[in-house]
Amino acid sequence: MIDPESVLYRKASDKEVRLCFGGHILMENRHGLCSEFTLHNPISETESEVALCQIREHQQKHKGVRIRTVGADKV
Image (cartoon, rainbow, N blue to C red; front, side):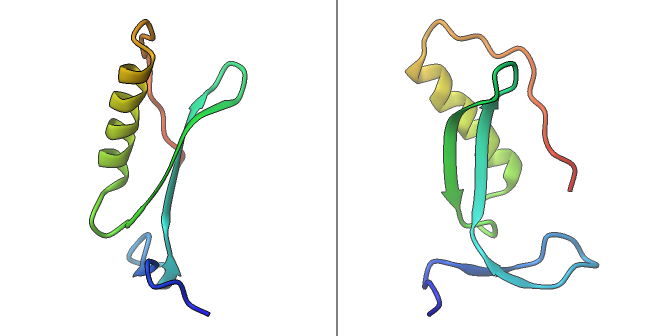
């Protein structure tokens, strides 16, 4: 059974096409806690757009939180 919300996506030009979702986790690195998890369409929204949206939402939910650095996994 194929989920109708999944899309065909290629992560890099030399990689194969796969049926997938985009998933992103906003982590607190010091203690390894997940503070935000987002599923999205990887074709309509880029990884950097989703990451910035997660940061904005996190700052709105937790007014006193100050984000110092942001990192990303290597592709």
